Amino acid sequence: MLRKLLILHKASGVPLFKVDLKGTVVNSDDVLLGGMLRALGDLAEELKIGDFSSFKTSDKFFLISSLKHILVVLVLDREDDAEEYKQFASEIAWSFETTYSLEEWDGNVERFSGFKDKVMMALERLIWRNMSEGYDEKNLPNGVVGYVLYDRGNRRFWAELKVDVRVLELIQLSETMPGEVVKVNDELLTYLFIKKKREPFRIIALLSKDMPDRDVQRYVKLFEFICENAMKTITLNRNLVTAAKALFGEETIDEFMEKVEGKFLLEILMGLEDPLQTLEVVRKMDVRGMVSLD
Amino acid sequence: MREGYSLFEKISLLYEILKSPILFYDKIRMLKDIRKYMRMLVIEALEPALSRMPIGKEIPIEKLMKVEGYVDGELLLELLRFVEEEGVIRVKQGKIVLLREAPERPFSNMLEKMHPKLLEAFGTFGEPTVKVIRARLSGDVDEVGSAELRVYWSIALGGEFYRIQRDKAIRFSRVKEEAGKRAGTFRLLDYGCGSGEGTVQLFNHLSEVKDELEIDGCDVSEELLRMAREDTGLGLPIHFFSLKEERPAEGRYDAIFISHVLHWLEDPVRVVGELKSYLKPDGFIFGVESTISDRLYPVDLFIRLYGAKGFPTFEELQRWFGENNMKLNYDPVWFSFKATQV
Image (tube, rainbow over all chains, first blue to last red; front, side):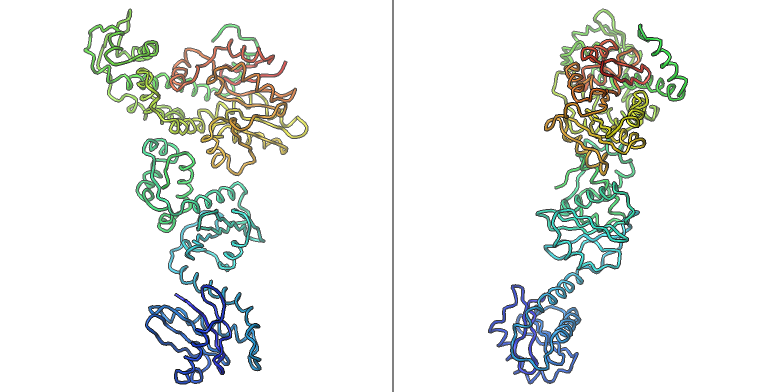
């Protein structure tokens, strides 16, 4: 895991900019680190533009990316894989050099403080990108273009968005929006931003713009239900099995008992081919007190 | 048919039969099936007691009650008549004779042959009704949880059996024509809306003829209202509210719909009076209310087992409205009614 990001002036070894988990304060450790790097056999000078270097200490792993005027140093955990972070380090380096002219740097580091926003965006992309890979695509009901369920607290995706949109920008937008349910339309789509107080799970859903309002509201309820109960397991009330079969069909309830009961709602979302349809049945059963969620 | 039908009512009755003979025939079949449904349920409920009786030996009913721990003799007599109808027992002068062995699980075995609309509406009530019969006879607190009952009723009310009756009431009352004709917003209240099946049906009908529409649904059960809000009526512009928290506004409504509610109430005259107060001066009440008859007696017993007061006679129904200065029009085929202010 990335612990610290440091941008050093290549010629002088002066720390220009730093981000760690707690902020951007430049402290003496980073000055020492700059000195240490210079001392390592003039590493900074030897590295060509676009090159990477790395070394390990007892508990840390240092990855260094070089451009014309700067070195970007990532301080990682010892066991981290450098390959995962190289693209990120390059991206930061290029972004810094193209944002600030360093040909005639006057020694003032204050001017670089605005770079924090760019770093944070890139960091978000790095963290979320790693988490979002590897989930199978699911069948979506008519009118649902895509959706993403994520755990904001642990920065983890639980369902893949099926459309080519900038997911992180949508997530950031969602976090700035007031209210638990926000509906936004553009020319093509209706966006639903669902977040529940005290719940880390959030959903951003993209619906066809011509979906009838009644159906949109049904999806709002379904997505709220998923956010509220993501980590709960589902049990069918045995006294109401006959009623459930009468209402939803024998086949549906048999399938429910086989594939859904006793599982976390998230497992269902990840494991079934048509999770939204199944979860809508679960929601309707919950409305009728036919299931318990614990 | 009861005495004293007006010429208009007789013509209406004939018209209803001629207009939809298949539906009418269907209804007669369903009522026949309901009788059989109740017979089988009663036999299944009494099966433990019947199985302990020797065939051909007269047993005083009092003794049966003592042995089985029954406390409600009146109900037992009602139930035994159903068993007698099936030819399993004979009841005479306070004594009961078992004529043949009672069939095993007769209700479960008849389900396949039951009218599909009846099965859809009441199929799920089988097991709970057996429990309720046994509990009532023993004087126990109802064994079937109210949460379960709510689900069973919502399934029943969502089925064709009740949907057809509501459709007939909508037609009988000419509420669509009234909505189309009246200026401004047409306001309707579904009183005792339950899980909202009827409210949505009303909305669908009225929104065909009127854009300026406000439909409210109210009930005392929060759980049924949740079903209405979060599923049945979800996404529709219907305001569902709890009668425990909010009273309908006086003089607000053009029409109030009340279906299969009055026969559950302790004091229907008072409630009709309250409903009248929610109406505009030219507003009316309409809905479905069965009146007791031989054919409907098994249904009457069924609802009483679950706590209803029982179907009124036509005269009682007329009185409930008459004492509130309302004139009742009634369709005895589909039990639709419309009450207007005098």
